[in-house]
Image (cartoon, rainbow, N blue to C red; front, side, top):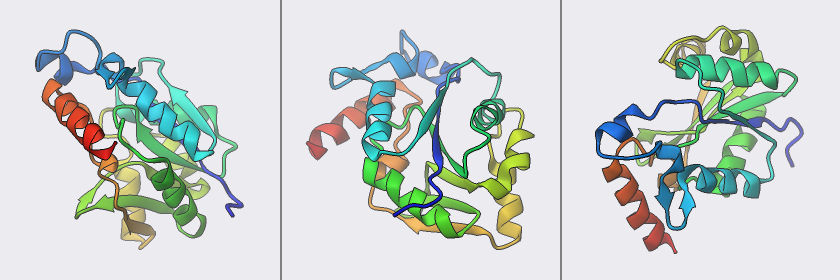
Amino acid sequence: MLQHIPTVLVLASGRGERFQKSGGSIHKLHASLAGKTVLQHTLSAVRASGLPWHVEDAGHPGMGDSIAAAVGATADAPGWMVLPGDLPLIRPDTLRTIAEALADCTVVMPVYQGERGHPVGFSAACLSSLLALTGEQGAASVVRAQAQQGRVRQVEVDDEGTVTDIDTVQDLERAAQLLAARE
């Protein structure tokens, strides 16, 4: 059982410009996928995981700013799992797996068939670095710094939802096919 349960930070602040440029008429998180919005699918998985969570949707200029704001809003948490809101196929058991792996390391990232995905988990040791983030790069600088110290663990997962984000209308169509095949 988890003693130090991290908070899932669902990032929903992005502008979704690539989705609109690809032909989408609304924000990607509000796009319909099998009768629910993309964000509703993501939040359903988060709720089903049983982990605490926070949605950051204040419209920050970059992913780094969004992560810093979400961490700041949950600064008393023993750790965080950064989950972009556009990963509607993520599975609840994968979220729990990453949370459990974070219990004994500083940074955890899921890997699906050789590809790094989300959510990336960070222990409380990363608090000041996460709060200092700004701009578009997200937490890549924090991951690199921890990797240089040998504090990053990659966890193999059998969940294509960790790498299936919705950036274009074509991504949404692919996600619909994957969801239909899953069900």
